[in-house]
Amino acid sequence: MSKSSFSRRKFLATSLLTTAGLGALPQLSFGASAKTLKSRDTSKVRLGFIGVGRQAMGLLGNFMKNPNVEVMAAADVYKIKLDRFKIRTEKLYADRGGKAGEIGLYADYKDLLKRSDVDAVVIASPDHWHALMAIHACKAGKDIYLEKPLTFTIKEGQELVKAVRSNGIVLGVGSMQRAGGNFQHAVRMVQKGYLGKISTVYANVGTPPFPKEIDFEAQAVPAGLDWKTWNGPIPEVPYFPDLNPPISLNPEENEKAWGAWRWYKKTGGGLMTDWGAHMFDIAQWGIGMDRNGPVEIIVDKGEEPMKYRYANGIEMIVSPFDDNTRQGVKFIGEKGWITVSRGNYATSVKECEMSFDKEQLGFSPHHIDFIDSVLMRKDPIVPVEVGHSTCTVCTIGNIAHDLGRSLKWDPIAQVFIGDAEANARLHYNYENGLAL
Image (cartoon, rainbow, N blue to C red; front, side):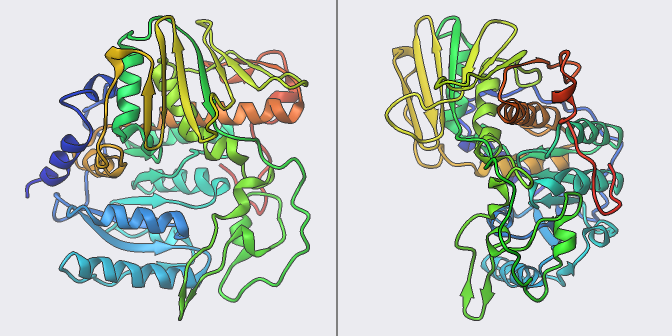
C-alpha cells in the first residue's frame, strides 16, 4: 500500500465524512514541515513509547492495528512494565502475521530519543512529565502523540507550543472524542446553527483534585522502580502503590485501577483535567472557542456550580445536566438542545436527529489520523494549540477553585487580569535540577 492508503480509507469510512462529520472537522494545515521522515520505508511510521502503564497498553493495541506502524522501543522507570511491553508487542506482531524486531527497552527516555530509527513517540506518562518529555522529543526531531491533558501548567503549555512549531513537529493530542461520529455530528449541528444562538453549555466533568496534599505513609519502593525519577520535576511525594499500580507477569496480572496520581493536587488535576480535557474540548469546539478561551471563571462559595463566561456571552456550566451523571456535554440554544457523551446522543431538534452504529461511536480513527498526519506532514485533528487551549480551561478552573474566588482571564495573553496571586500559579519551580 502506498503511503497511508489503508488508514485514510479507514478514517473516511468511520468518521461520517459523507453524512454529518465533514462540517465539524477543523480546517487542517497541509503545509510541508521542515522535518522529513527518516524511515527507509516512507509508508511506515516507527514508534517509540514513553511511559508504558495501563493507558499505553491500550494505545499500543490501537496503533498496532495499523499496518503502517512499526514499534521499535519503549522507556519507563518501572522495569516490569517494560518487560510487559515487550511481551505484548511481540504478541501483537504475531497477531498481525509478522514478527517483532528487537524491541529496545530504556529506563531513561532520553536514550530512546537518541535513536535515529524512531520517527515518532507516544507519550503516556503521568501529567507532570508531559511537558519536559514532549519538549525534549521536539528537540530530538520526533513527532509526538501526547496523552491529555496536554501539560501540568499553563507555562508548560506555552513552551510546548513554541517547541512544536519552531522544530516543525507533528503533535497530536489524545483528545480522541473528536473522532467519534456522535461528537462530530453534535458539533456540526451547533456550528451550522440548527440550535440557533447558543446561550449555555453544560460540561459534566467532575471535581477538582483532592484539596489535601499526599500524606500517606511511605511504603517500600518495589524492585525495578526508580521512584526519584518518577517524581522528576515535582516536589517529592512518598511511594504508595496506588500512584503507580503494580503488575505481575507470571501469573499475568495487570493494573486494577488507574494511577491515583491524577487525583491529588501535587501530582494531578483531578477529574477537572482527567475528564475536562475531553468534555471541555468538545464544548469549546462546538462554540468555536477551541483556540481561544473564556474571559471569566465564576466561583460561588454557595451551592452554585463553577461557570466559565466567554466574551460572546456564552456560559459553560461545570455540572451534570440531567438525571444521568455520566460525563458529557449539553448545548442549549434558542431552538433546542443537544446532549452528547460516550456512546450516546440526543436532541430536541428534529433536524439534528441522527443514529450511529458501534463503529461510528468508536475512536480508532483518532489514532489513524495521527499516523496519516505524520506521513502527510499536516496537523492532526487535535493540534497542539487546541490541546493547550483545552488544558488551559481545566487548569484555570482548578486555580479558581483552589483560591475560592472568581477570576478574570485574558485568553490571548494567557494571564489572569490584575491578579498576582493567581498568576503565581501558572507554573511552579521544578525540582531535581530540571528546567523547561
